[in-house]
Image 1 (cartoon, one colour):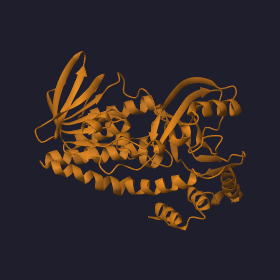
Image 2 (cartoon, rainbow, N blue to C red; image 1 turned 135 degrees about the vertical axis):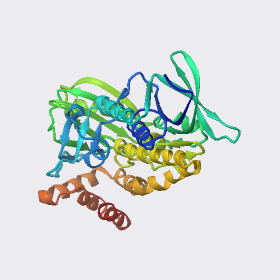
Image 3 (cartoon, helix red, strand yellow; image 1 turned 180 degrees about the vertical axis):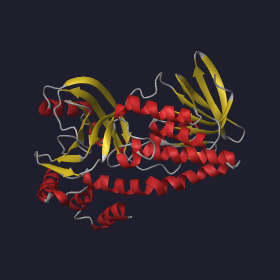
Image 4 (cartoon, helix red, strand yellow; image 1 turned 45 degrees about the horizontal axis):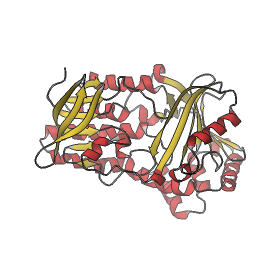
Length: 391
């Protein structure tokens, strides 16, 4: 049964929230994680791919929640030219998020966090100084007030918690990708390859992806820039691409949502509250991927929250901004610059880039080389590319 007071309350049990709860609990403080849905891991709102390097920092890979092991990336130009980068080693996985998220929450519980589902947070508690001091939650027909020293908001891109705390969580529509994805059967693709399609007719201001999820099954989706989706919906692009590439596909599930492809806001911390994951826009602005970054952000937020409570120094939470910037924020700022250039390429430019990449010997095809080719006429950005792969 929930108590009336905890040291830390985490709102949202996605990867960022569960890792935040786990890392706070590891500091020896009391932690409550609240999830509004009845099950952790539902609904799934992403393409489910993650790089191995980050994942193994937080959880040991387990075949129960791995649908595909990735060693290759395939990039397809508007004219159909395909350039494949073979890493010769495991680069990442396509997850079964329903099981993966569940396991992350179990880890948090094992380290001492209390996890409660179907707990709907509808407001915050404040003291006379406007410091956040807990949450108002509806649980099993009752409206409860639960106090805490720190609230960690991992409640997604809309982050109502952030808004209630007075933080600006809005995203310019031009930086919001409108995404639509289906999980489909009868999609025959290699199970070790992530497929990325580019072009104005395929997915303007974004890309179309096909990520394997077991034999003849894949996550098929796309993101369309906010400016472009005002003209035409992401669903219409997805339907057209599916009919052209996989006319026999059978749709098993479908999801839609917005992804904030922009850098972290200037303020994602206030007295008594910290934002993490999508709530803090901790998403790779170039790829739109947020699982790995959210886990990194969650681990920093949770640890720092625990330290602040142990040392009885609530101002310590403001160290979170600096540590996030060092861990991922500076890299996301560079990716944001690349995004503005790359997604503005014409179809002809994409065709030339893929032709040049495919012309290279297999051993010289790398992500770094892809960036170098794509940004050949942008000297200042080439320096940023070098920093990403050298520093």
